Amino acid sequence: MGDAMQEAIEQEIKKHKILIYGKGTKSAPQCGFTMETMRFFDKYGYPYEVINVLQDQAKRDALAKMTNWPTLPKVFINGTFYGDTDILDPMEKNGEIEPLLKNAFTADPSSVKEEGKA
Picture 1 (cartoon, rainbow, N blue to C red):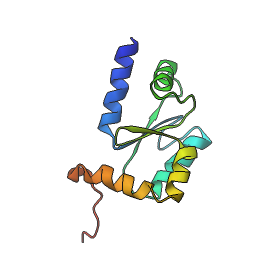
Picture 2: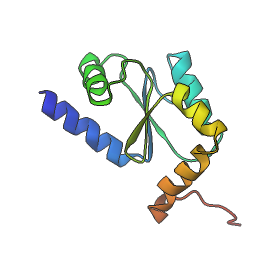
Picture 3: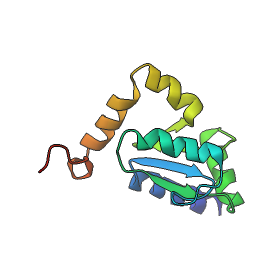
């Protein structure tokens, strides 16, 4: 079953340019850290998805094993694991986030946010 879970997670990661595995949903976060991570990405205006793993211990365990990161939320950008805001905040201060996000969304032109359209 572990392989099926890992495969399902990998498919979710491929499906979303920015993916947050957290506690709760976009409309009803159930953890301050998940909410903080959502606010972090809200600043940039790119679409992201939140997958609630609060009640899914098997998925949480699989994610912890895959990432070697025990806590939630877990953030993936363009298929790469970036931890949470403990990692993202310093990256933002160093000017690394905007180019990373821009690159993630320009790699697939259909997913670029629309700028300057009337």
